[in-house]
Image (cartoon, rainbow over all chains, first blue to last red; front, side, top):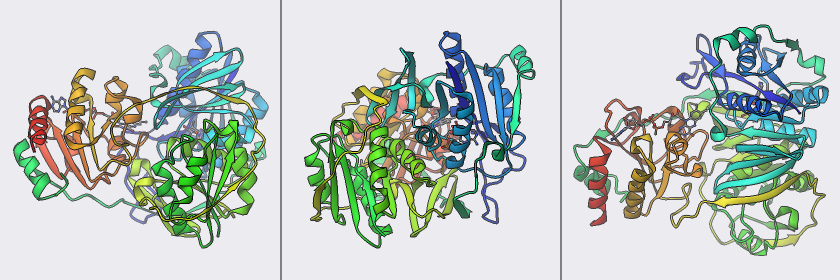
Length: 249
Length: 312
Ligand SMILES: Cc1cc2nc3c(=O)[nH]c(=O)nc-3n(C[C@H](O)[C@H](O)[C@H](O)COP(=O)(O)OP(=O)(O)OC[C@H]3O[C@@H](n4cnc5c(N)ncnc54)[C@H](O)[C@@H]3O)c2cc1C
Ligand SMILES: Nc1ncnc2c1ncn2[C@@H]1O[C@H](COP(=O)(O)O)[C@@H](O)[C@H]1O
């Protein structure tokens, strides 16, 4: 079975993002970018399926600027076999990303597509579900466990009330939650090997997809700041303040 | 404009999150607000939904395919109704997040996730970058598809007298099957609805020690939350995770114990009314947003706090 994994280049999760003074967005000049953490988990899961003999080939796909090649090389270093960059400098919304990924799926015919549950920049949590819809495939979102059994994907999902298990006819879309696995660090030899793996670059138009945004960002602001609080000396003082000052207990 | 709200339920009880979504729907609507209850033998849910203030009509689709809230059949059903509505809303819970983007893609709409304010019929505010920025976005799509963050809208009360209309099921794609679930059983209030939340982090050190959080919760009638690190280490179940990628809470009182205060955690609780933090590291970032900070060893302070609260 061939597996498609989607990897997004995002501002690293350790960066303290700042809103631009003109309200046009957040500051992205001179900040560190990395692979979206949920997508690292997606690549790792695909590599494990290949190591266990279930998957035959892993194709990593990214939509973004030329620098997203680095993100794809990182996926190749973890163990993906080939990469496809759909290059654009425009901001691409989840719906358009899903359409591009669906077009790639149409060419590649994978048995499974693995995405992150959420990109930590836009926090949309949409793309995997949308991809499944466009392809008419079933979806297993927020996965903390995945097994391929008799041509079906058995997915344990992290839901608000606990855990749920669903069984999906392949081809299917799976989106990763944090506890699906712990991604490996790429070894130096694998980083070197990744440089020689095939990386195809396409334009959105090559896939016949219109990526015109449907949402206009009117402004981006800082959230209201919380006032600095006080330090209490002991639990006695704490309880007293919660009772008489804050009046919450 | 007419608005459809997708109800969340377990075939018996209407989830509180739906009431918050109805409030957003009423704000948005210039026409009727309808609630869709899709389930199996879910008439009691439809009855509750009909009594929610602001709801004009409840659509009840009763069929085996809807018993477990699977996204694939549900999305087909909602799509079959979509042309009657200008907006389709669901709560930004794991249920709503699973189903609604599937609907949005099928009707070719860019969804707006996690809406925290409705500016006008086409303009919404939503957090991005773990809540470090708030984006105001205008949708150019004819129909709006939105998930609603419950902490930003009050729960709609009782007092509705909606009619209940039975509707036919849509075709079931039948590519997915429910296998089973492990529901976290707890006598405690729901995390997202609780007046008080006490959360523990990696500082608790073990699953056994994490029991101290239960003692604290008992004393306060609180729900128990956790940081990602505490969940990853197995101290607490996955559905206790508070944060950017877990649950969003905004209780009257939030007590963080042995939690450093990473931005991903703050994203889930910084809108709480009063925040208390206990941490042995005086530079822990959680103290920058806490109203009351106690620097100390939790193994010393927590038992004292529990004792004080117990004989209040
Ligand atoms: C993609 C992504 C998503 C994430 N999503 C979330 C999320 O939704 N929610 C979330 O919480 N995190 C999330 N995280 C993880 C987050 O970045 C932090 O790693 C996590 O919140 C840390 O948990 P912690 O504060 O319990 O642990 P630590 O950061 O290890 O902090 C433990 C704290 O306990 C204190 N401590 C230790 N011993 C004692 C003692 N005896 N007495 C008092 N204090 C003590 C220490 O001083 C320290 O401050 C995410 C990370 C990523 C990359
Ligand atoms: N530009 C992109 N390139 C590749 N994958 C993406 C892109 N945007 C989103 N994805 C995938 O979709 C997932 C969810 O993203 P989102 O719906 O934006 O929260 C991510 O974890 C990625 O796997």
